Image 1 (tube, helix red, strand yellow):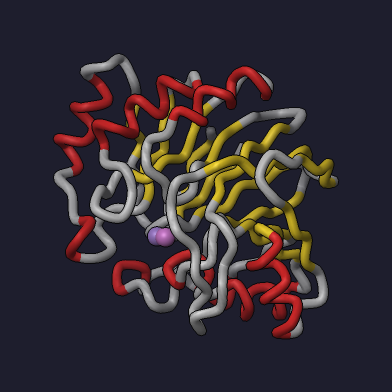
Image 2: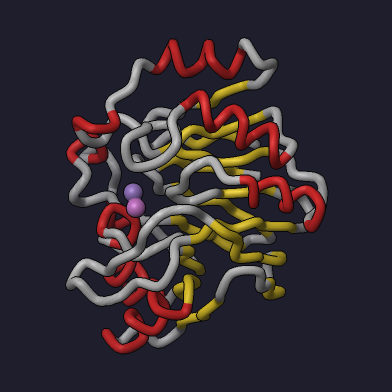
Length: 227
Ligand code: NI
Ligand code: MN
C-alpha cells in the first residue's frame, strides 16, 4: 500500500485505486512548501477533528476533486454547509463500508473546534480495514485505555500512525504504549516539528521505539513509501 506524507499529520494512502487523504494542513505549513498542492488528487478526505492544523486545506481539495469528506457529525456538517457536496458523518464506535474498505471512527482524548470557532464535536481516530492492509490513525490524542479495545474489535493491524510531538498530544514515550495497546510494531510518527511547541529530537524518538522493539518511521515531507 502506497503511503505519502504531506507534513504535520497529513498523509495519503491508496487502497483499491482510491486515494484517501487524512487531515490536510499543507499551505499554511512552513515545512511543507515543497509539496505541490495543486497536484494533490484524492477521492476521500478523512478528518480526525476540527482543528485548523487538520482541516485547513480540506475545503479547497474537496471542491477541486469532488472528494468526499468523512469526519465526525459536527465537522462533516460544517463542511456540507460551506458547500462541500459529498460528506459522510460518523460518530464514535461506528463503522461504514466504503468502496475501498471499512472505516471505524474511534475514541480520542482531545478537543475539537472548527477554524471559525464553531463547535467541532469530539475528536476521534480511524481504524481502516481493507483487502490489503489494516491500520489505525489515532488523530490528535492522549494515550488512552480505549486504545486497548481496538485489537479486540478489528482485524490484525499492519501499522499505526500516531502523534509523537508532545504538548498538544502524546509524546514518543506514550506513543510506544499506544502502539503496544493496538498491537502494532510499525508506527509512522506524525504531529511533530511543525511548531515550536512540538519540536522533537527525532533520533531520541526513534530510540524510544527501538528500545521497546518497535520501529518508528519518520518520513520526509512529500516522501512516498510502500507499507
Ligand atoms: Ni488538534
Ligand atoms: Mn493538531
